Amino acid sequence: MGAYEAVIGLEVHVQLATESKLFCSCPNKFGASPNTNVCEVCTGMPGALPTPNRRAIQYAATVGLAVNCAINRSSRFARKNYFYPDLPAGYQISQFELPICEHGWLDVDAGEGARRIGITRIHMENDAGKNIHAPAENASYVDLNRAGTPLVEIVSEPDMRSAAEAVAYLKALHGIVTYLGVSDGNMEEGSFRCDANVSIRPVGEARLGPRTELKNLNSFRNVQRAIEYEISRQEDILEDGGTVVQETRLYDAVKNVTLAMRGKEEAQDYRYFPDPDLLPVVIAPEELAAWKAALPELPRERARRFMEMTGLPAAEVEVLVQTRGLADFFEESCAGAEPRKVAALILGPLLRECNARGVAPSPDMCPDVWKMTPRALGALARVIDEGLISAKIAADIFGDLFTSGVMPEDYVKEKGLAQISDSGALEAAVDGVIAANPAEAEAYRGGKTKLMSFFVGQVMRATKGKANPALVNQLLARKLA
Ligand code: ADP
Ligand code: MG
Ligand code: ZN
Image (cartoon, rainbow, N blue to C red; front, side, top):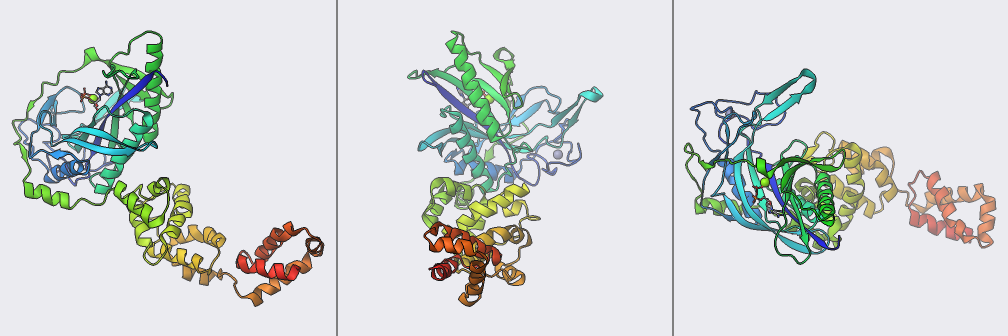
């Protein structure tokens, strides 16, 4: 892009996977019929009092610990006042001057080595409900099931310099919250949402340019494309001698453009003030120490360890750690099998199955489809290794093993698929193939040794792929000599 440098800061909203909402005991659950998970508190009835959810506070602090934040011993909830139909109280309860976590960072790698991205703050807040517009009925509906759902907002420093880096940061964050188990991270359902702030400036300029804020980015791909579009839009403006207007823009994924939504002049004054119904959130040092001690191994460290176990490059190991479920599955499958061979089975046939069947790459997320146990995958790696079945047969039967949960040895025995490594049995097949193809045998003996692969193929066909390839080669070489 030459003369300009992009500057990107992200605001990420993460829905916490608590049982109940942030300030009441209503279920925190996606997909219920409208306005069934509601009470006086989350519908903003006058006089109803909020009670903070201890688990939500723990989750928020845990996210902070995982991204190297300082956790404030005391933080405070404030009222952020604005009017919108999906916000029944007329204010959102959020944290303003005193958020729960501050001053963190995350190392991300978008292919040019690790870069440290600053995290300004993480604060807790409750989600709003949802407006559902039905133009055909000339009506709008409000569903308050989501109102009061606990969120953390993770605000980054304007430290990212490309769309790819923003996506790498977002994926790293997504990996962390799902590994921690504090969120399901489901982007389609809105559990993990992102606004991207984008500006550009001449290379070498220290001051930041005016930024636009992009909303409605509900997939990694859309984040990438929206930021790329926005950078080039701003470049065109500057090239034409114009200035970028600070405003909020909406990304239209179908047209792949960003459109002005509201300008700065419409920016709201939220009249923040501490919520008089809520005491400060105070975290005892012992409590914080216990949460810290309970942090699981996070994707980055895990990837590093898997690289040592398998000798595979970073890009492949990253695929193995993309979900905690898959990483656990890999690691458990390695008991008694060679890690590199187990990894090859996951990176190849197993992920192909997930893709083909449209299920998430994690056994806990698709238990109805993914029946294969780690023990079965480890055993499969071993039976291939020991020559009981060929790699080709392994690939053919993988789908059945994946969805049945049957142990590979049992499956192979039942279907009679064991590799033929007995030279007596193979000799007959080899003799048969040579006898059936006299012209090719003649040509081979005359010097057309390239025909070897033809003969191997014929023997394989005659044995339905069960012949041990090394032995077939040996026998053919001897008999054709
Ligand atoms: P607001 O709450 O109005 O969105 P903040 O100051 O909290 O404003 O900033 C929100 C995000 O915008 C942060 O992630 C920050 O890093 C980013 N940001 C601020 N200024 C710029 C800029 N000039 N270019 C890109 N990102 C920016
Ligand atoms: Mg913002
Ligand atoms: Zn409620």
